[in-house]
Amino acid sequence: MQDWLQARAYASPEKVAIIEHISVAYSNKITFKQLNQRVDNFCQQLTDAGVETGQHVAMLMMNSTLAIVPFFSAMRLGLVFIPLNSRLTLDEIDFQLKQADCDYLLPYGTTDFLSALRDRGHKIINVLKNKKIKELTFKPQDIELEKPFFVVHTSGTSGQPKAAMLTYGNVFYSAMASAYRIGHLPDDRWLCILPLYHVGGLSILIRAVLYGITVDLREKFDADDINHALTHEPITLISLVPTMLYRLLETRKATWNESLRLVLLGGAATSPELMQQCIEQNIPVATTYGLSEASSQVATTFPDNASRKAGTVGKPLMFTEVKIVDENRQSQKAGDYGEILVKGMTVMQGYYNNPEATAQTLKDGWLHTGDIGYLDAEGDLWLVQRRSDLIITGGENVYPAEVEAVLRKHPAIKEVAVVGIPDPEWGQKVATAIVLNPEQNTSADDIESYARQHLAGYKIPCIVKFVDALPLTGSGKIQRSAVQALFDED
Image (tube, rainbow, N blue to C red; front, side, top):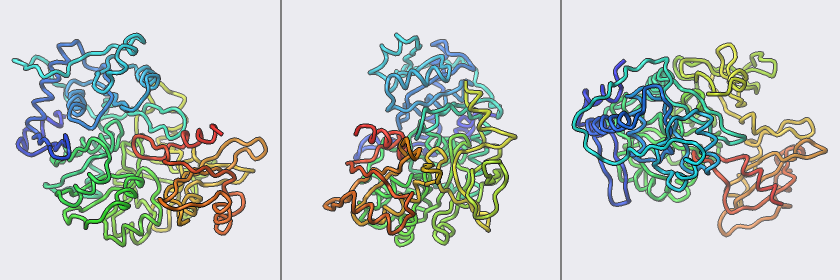
């Protein structure tokens, strides 16, 4: 198969591929032809630096064309690309580089750590300067769908991240299945605020090249900036996590631009309260469920179904199977909770350098997600909780999402995260970190009293901690391990 960007540049050379927002007042438009030329130039520089087909090349990713060009250069040279979180510490970078057997690190975004990383044995090459290439001497690689394309680290909401190996075929079929579900139009403009080290961000780049649409690239999430774009610019698609949408709605005063045809909302369970706000404001929300190990989307529902059945993530995408099983891997009937299993062409090869975790996760062709959910009588999937977040106290199961949904209705509570902390008597105790609404106040006793009106006794938080902000992962999810650490400080 021909290089996807090369084919797109031939088919629609003058179509705008990327609108990169450098500042509030300035943006830069790059056509597919220009992007293709930059990739050719970068490939030559990599070749001149000694990089060879099949090697692993890592980069700390920023939402910038300086990261996009190396990503598509890896495709052209047949490299395995390792996108890394730009907010990592030195030790975390070192761990992930070693875990993924990286041959080289590109230095963009790592200037503070270059010397220390060299001291730890990592090869760093600087090929980011714009030098002109007189003649191309590298050999572009044909795409083989079964070959690995990139290794993406799981988000690390709890425990250490693992490195999921995704092939060209995985992301190709993911892009096709997404298009079959949500459609795509020639004038689509997809606002990308998800980080490019995350499979959600990278999938937008891949889809844009395959579909021939434009990516509106933003460096970081800024509620005022995104709200302005959704009001004044012809954005048709945007991918958000619930935390982002909450913050947009908090500050939003203007009407939504009529060009917006879909808000893909995923990354965590969507609360009924948030869905109700979307319904009242006529926001076209398509709730979705996905994960790194399945190349992003697994199931997505249409806005009309999302409003009719608030909380569902809909039916699996084409070519993807989902089933719910109990602890003995027996299929559950409609409405019964169990682990979500996924099967299909988008499922990863495995975890790189981690055969034990791969064997635990991939069994008989099924990806064991570790997430808890159920299928209803119509075959729609409902996401309840990540298994790793499940709290077991005195032998009873407590789902943090359920407790959070109740507490979020308290008028003084703006944001809430519920976690389990070790307890010698009960195994775990239920604890909650709370961000209060401005100019509101409450007490731990009031929170407990409120919870008792709506929850069984074993679900009520034993410990309440008021904080200024909840710790989030780079992709906007609550970082449960960091929330747990807040209670270690006491």
